[in-house]
Amino acid sequence: MTSDQPNVASIFNAARKLTVADERAAFLAKSCGADIALLKRVEKLLAALTEESQYLEQPAPGLQATILTGPDGSDRAAEVGGDAEAGCGQSVSVGW
Image (cartoon, rainbow, N blue to C red):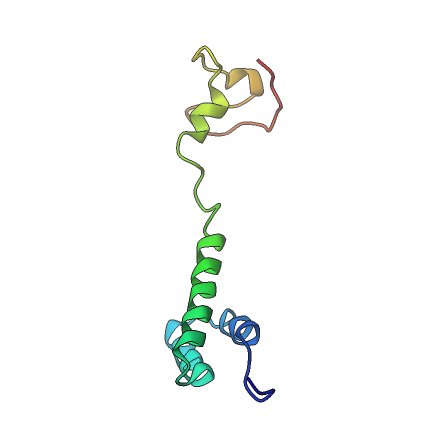
């Protein structure tokens, strides 16, 4: 690779800033040209970035019940100052 050719990191960093899919696709086509392997590497990095950015969008399944339920299955929301039905409470460390 010559110094005139952009590397994976520089293409990825520029492409990740483009939020419109058509603009990103056009940029990748222009930047990668006929180098399909380069295109695939950058696309894989962009896909991983998307997955990572959505990682904490939703709480883990069952997390609410785990936090507000004691080891014996009892409702512990009142003990931490929250409301289990409303799904709200204060962040408190509790040892059972």
